[in-house]
Length: 229
Image (cartoon, rainbow, N blue to C red):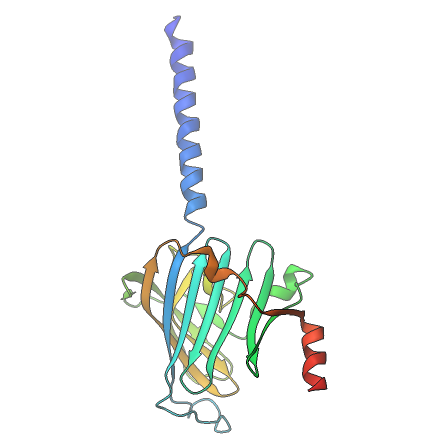
């Protein structure tokens, strides 16, 4: 009879340890550190709008995303237009655009959203579950969904990974994981993004820092600067 309370206490401690370990692993799974590289390709726009412009089909485009927990750096490479970069701190809800004009570097601080309703992504993209094959992209298993949009005559198939949070490349409001193959509609047409490289590692902090000799400006001050030029 003396051993029973001690045994019950031991079972409770083991259960608490299990819950703690499970909670820690759950928290770890919500973060990602590493590099994601997407290829970007403009596809046939005949079924969208005839007024959309046609880009050079030989243009090479990439989206490179570096992540270190809550830090994100996005590099958009275009072989014709050069490089566009941004740095984002998810925890502090801060985003900075890195620009170069006439060999002068600027870091433009974008205004912080005042409430969560303003952060909602484009609701014209609608997602629905559909049973079609899972596909791997750069080694990541992709779960399928159907994408619909008012400017699309047909639904499109997309894939996402449920193992990485969508916040590292937030494109659709309803997507429950990182997009692996997806589409974006812009004024220039329909663009296909497909993950071609996935590298999980701990990037150096210097990647997410503002380069030296960079002028840090608010968005309002940067607009004023452009108007004076």
